[in-house]
Image (tube, rainbow, N blue to C red):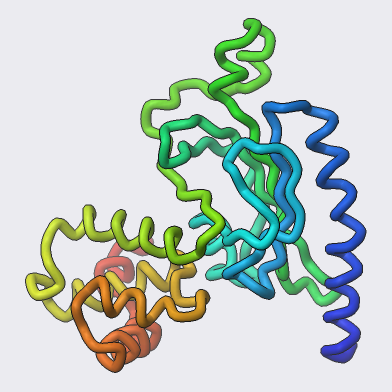
Length: 227
């Protein structure tokens, strides 16, 4: 199948799912939000949205979850019934289902977000249906309409993990940082290399060089951890 035919097929799948977004959200009511993503344009991947749990809007950016999916490419799979928190502490139960064309290529996702905190506070039956268990260690996810804010949030998280400046990292640690950012889908976003370089205080050329080296080498630490 030619490239134009595949693009038309993907467009048709997106068009067919757009009314489904409204139908799912209407079925579950105000605690539910449904978001349709087109990964062909990650900086404005939201093409349809119904409900308002994370404050998404059409034309908005994907979250870290979507960027991670994008980084995995065609190896990405559905992620169902996982918990996360928004930056303001709201507990959200989500499912992300990837969209594939007839060749098996991943090009988008349909996401369902439920306000799990509201469900917990409701009737005991609704609490059981929410199935949230212990939410103490739930990761924080940035849901925003600006892709730069999502990239910044990922950089902030990595900076906390590193606990030291770029100058304090040796070569292996620098490569590991770029490899991790790449695995999180950061560099699939336009201008991300420039954004990362500015945050780290290095030149754009240096950032591209580290990214190239990170993609060309294997992390010895992770290699040694393999069975």
